[in-house]
Image (cartoon, rainbow, N blue to C red; front, side):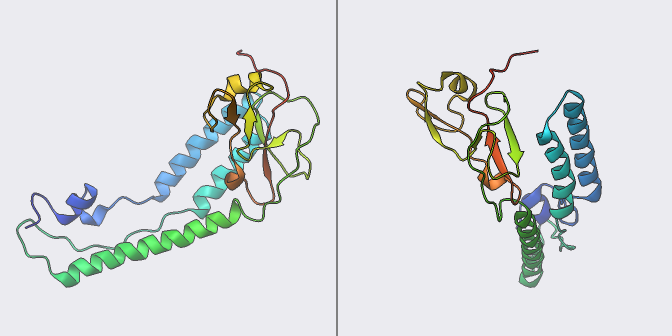
Length: 200
């Protein structure tokens, strides 16, 4: 006995033939919403990070399009489930998972691979805790690699970051570690010496 409801309802909360997967309409809605967010950021004077966000909004849905689960066998409450049918359902789900793993591997090839991180450097004035991408070998700031910093020489930066990314909050705090999030060949940089931001 499967209890109340079908096997698909028990596993996913919906009938087996309508197991939720990412649909083209879902990706279009997500892309539209993210595009609107990026447009608002750009209208308010966004930086190159906003342009990068726009590029990611296009690349991520196209690359990580979820595979679909083929038609699954339905099992009615109170009926005997044939092992062959159950195994076919699991095989269909396993094939969809393997397909999605392959798609995620393609996505991983775009991000966090072949990255030669920039060296810390100085350039134009920046805003404390501001993060951006750079393609240069020398950055206007410090690469965001999760470094542990002392609070005493960096009280302003600590007041902005706190211990969100690590540290004990008494003598140390940490920068975010964005190495795995950086697209190939680029480095996420954080401003550690600059202007303190103020509210509008």
